[in-house]
Length: 79
Image (tube, rainbow, N blue to C red; front, side, top):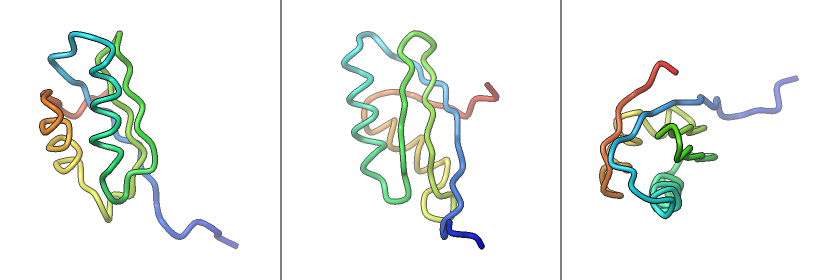
């Protein structure tokens, strides 16, 4: 029996422009507000953003745009 009704995908983005730890909460709040996003974790030291989301609700382009609205540039990361 499958109890999960929505598929969740983990997307990794690499961000540019981090200058302070407060950037982390700014990005987490902005991306976390999107429909379909379950969890956002920003790694300040590596400039990596991990996002658990429903790809049928929010696309990678939507996630990148949300990071952009927070004032930073992001791109998909292979690691």
